[in-house]
Image (cartoon, helix red, strand yellow):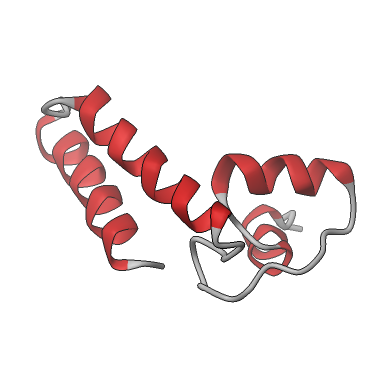
Length: 82
């Protein structure tokens, strides 16, 4: 995960977890969204930083434009627990 994304994600998580209230949540979420969009424009995965090449279906493509996760990271993140 890219350093800016890690920092913003950690801040949002820590603020919410520790105080149950995020300071400036919309500002931090906007920053996080901008960082995700930068990675999408570079065609890189927001998690593993690999170059994004192809997806198995349209749902995966839509997910990429939301989260920036490549197909492998999507598969690992959303795999069903048996």
